[in-house]
Length: 298
Image (cartoon, rainbow, N blue to C red; front, side, top):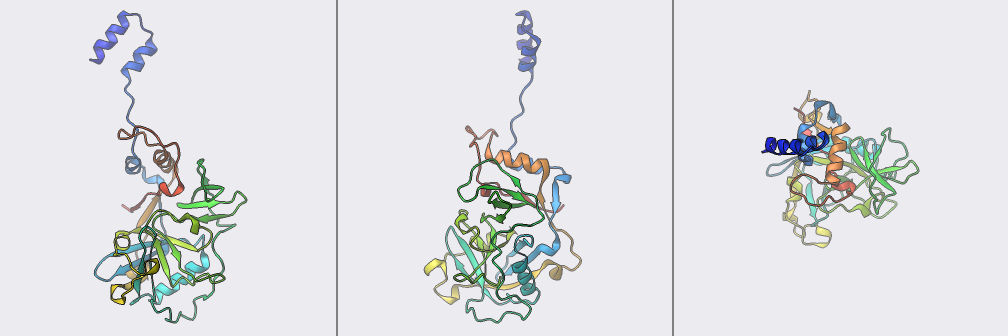
């Protein structure tokens, strides 16, 4: 069929550029998942094993949490100490609020913290220096002057050098009481609904769930105020939360996140879907609608 069209164009005296345009078939645009699958090994960066926690929930289910020491170093140090001393063993998931968060810790709020844990950390809600160079995206955002990514994390920025982590799906934050309380890190939550970005710069974000999110997000919703479980028997026991190095001595980086040209292509594809299913590209994307691809290291 193509040969017949070309011969007809030649007979009609069509210019060579027209022949080339007919002969060349434009490859369909790749979907974000296809870009991720095609990414070369050089565009995947290891997540340090020292930043990984393993949370085992009663009844089966392992959750892998990546910590963010560049953004909340004191809170993260507390969390590492709590995990190393097995403080969470025997505590529970106490709150599951639909389209919001799942929260865990000591339901009595009376369990003593280890002596080396900082009971009152500073307000690590935004940072002036992280050592990470943000890559800003061009689309407007209602919660920050600019948004983008730094070290594989979704961030907001004030345009004057300060940045903060964004409350995207699966991000992990520190529960706290009214200010000036900042939370020690003993009470944690993970976002399980539409990104509650109004919490940005009000609560310390300390990491994200990178595997096993289904063991948190699919729990029965609490019926008491704010999604807490009204009946203590509804609470889901936590068997343990431990550093990966303790659970698997000698383990090296087990997970990687996407960077480089592949992530740039992924980011653009999330904002403007041109793969065959879509009719109209969106023209932009919220930072939380560009989830950084994370995979198990081959």
